[in-house]
Image (cartoon, rainbow, N blue to C red; front, side):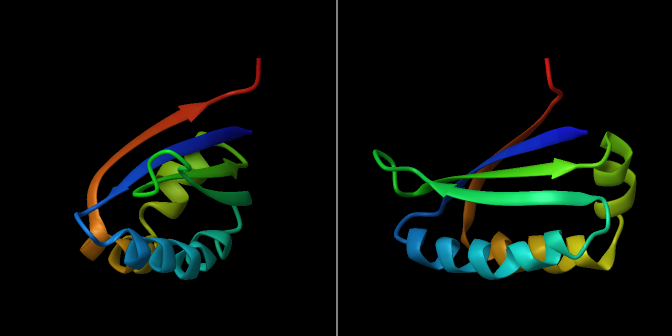
Length: 94
């Protein structure tokens, strides 16, 4: 199992739109059989920043399985109009 951590930042004055898009779009991520769980967090000090933490069965389940799927296209399409920046990293348990 690996965990993908994505930090997403909204474009100016679009944080509410991004919040709604992430909340609605996360269903596309959860549809993937390699997705074990997905959580969305919003910044308290910086409410235009969001953290999406997704547990995947394996790195391949995310990179090869999800990113090449129609569900990924729906996911990224739903959030991209409101996205100023993003950073994604993968982590494994210690």
